[in-house]
Image (cartoon, rainbow, N blue to C red; front, top):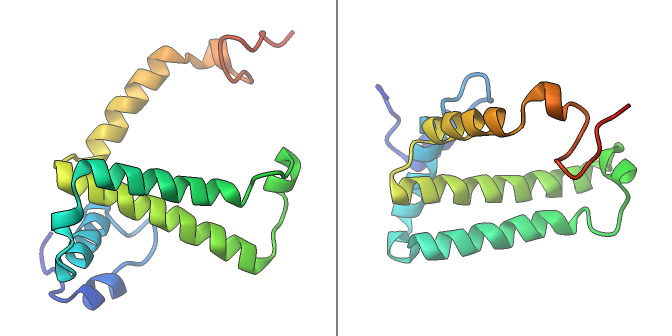
Length: 137
């Protein structure tokens, strides 16, 4: 990236929305957050993957014991904000893991989607969640 802001706060302020923010900019922000705290020493892939799983479990807690319909319904603003924070935690740890392991997020996503398209052809799986779900009549 050219003309990168130097401070973490400037990096944070430079983030706008999905349409205007490259993945590399998000990774850079997370990288500088970790560096400012000298947390690289703790960011072994093993540790980050466990932290990511914990954050994913915290996200799941918001949906535990409610119906599918309730999970799709409009939520109170504070509940929605809490869910958003858990999603951000999951994404931050995913970005940190990619930084630590030198993975390119876009490449990982592209290659995984190629496999998914081959594994789950749309004409065979439309409206079905898996092979054990019978085809719709």
